Length: 355
Figure 1 (cartoon, rainbow, N blue to C red):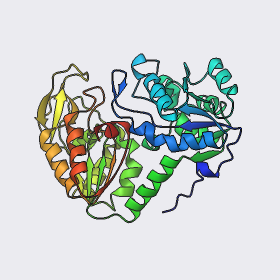
Figure 2: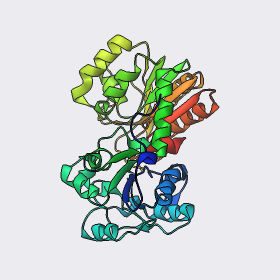
Figure 3: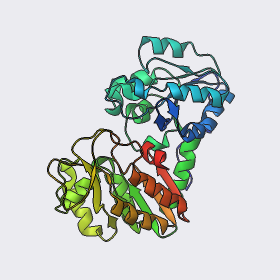
Figure 4: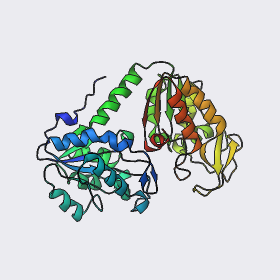
């Protein structure tokens, strides 16, 4: 399937400031990047802009800060690694909007670059605030989206900016869309989709697109508890997308034979790395318990389905990010994905960390 959107190779970049939205949501151990794959994958687009005489205004998120600056989620480690990979200094700005940022971007000369600080340090990013999107757009002449892992989210830097600037897809975005289009349009069977993440509402369109094409739809992460609730299971204090319980019931009634849900989960009484966890059947989650990850029985069942697949599409985490960064469930599924004979495609920082 050919990409219908214009790509960065179609853009006139000479002398232009180019806002490139990347997905540098890399796994960290303190300030050490444990897997730089997402940074490496962005290099072809970034190098192309510089080779064409453009200057770079690079943006990304990292982790899930609570709408304000948090040193733990600074892009400083990314700037250091990007400097090494590009072979030229990458200046990390102290923010992503404001007078200082505007001055730095206005002063950029061809082939120079800056990396904005984490766009999620502003709550307006995830709210897709129009004024915030316009402020980001004001920093550049051209917009390039190369953040495939967050392409499903309508945030200011991934969707809002595109309303104010000529917009193009980056090379990574182009490659992933081409693969995903082929996988969905003409998949090798068995075709298994793995969906995680917190809210059902974020995945409704994806579920509706995939359910008629997949052999198995695996649902995990926080969204699974809405489906478990729809089945009548107790979910304690686990995340519930109450507005979409009826959607979950409808999907289960029509396609229950295709949908795999957790049968056991890791639960805790609070979401923190220090919390004590236990494994519980989905029929026995306590009133004060919160689901944090898929359990060992579920991991084994999901892994069997993945190993048998010829095509796997995986988007979203199986566990909760406030807990262990890479929990047993996602790692077990990633190992099954690596051991299987099919072709995988994944999107989303947490699943990438597991893989």
